[in-house]
Figure 1: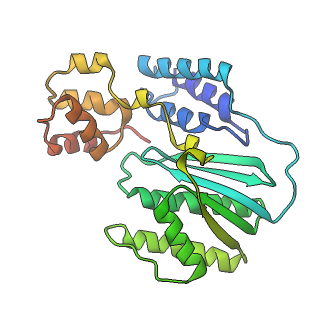
Figure 2: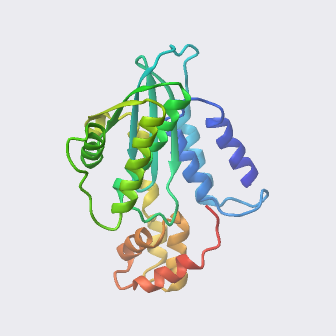
Length: 268
């Protein structure tokens, strides 16, 4: 039942400062569970996913924390974003003190660079709660690195264009205001993606993101009910669902996917 699923996820990551890969995984499973009421069944696929996670936790439990975080004004923050989630990690005196992850909304159509900017805003707010004022931001996004470097040093104009131009400038403006209001000293470092400690907080297993062989075998030509069946696997929004659907049937029009997504009444 849904009550039991939420209880299990709460016991896995609730009230712990560091949850690692478990954070996005538990959120992903809860989002895609069937049923709306507390006593509704969550579905066979969700049950299989949570059982898979529990077995993995027995071998590698990422939940931990430190009782003695040094008091200091200096800290390092790691941030990352993907099409699934944004993740942040806060490090103080070489010790990871806290991490967090947020699934992106199902209908989030923002460019990945905007999601990266959101991750920076979240991690800077987290750093402020810890009383940090000299903050090193580590990112694997070359675009974000360039924007923040220009914003901090004022050495050149911030260049961005496209539909997200004003969103990016708004977020950079908020960061600039935070720096001024709280006397923050920010500097940014570009790192390789495989070295980004926040990377694991934005991922779930790739096998979870593609239709199973059973679904593909059952749906050779996708009518509206077939599109909804595949959509219900992930609730990813129009563009991502269209990509998934056309792997099975390339002839499905975008308008059909839009109608299915628009009529979905399942909450986030």
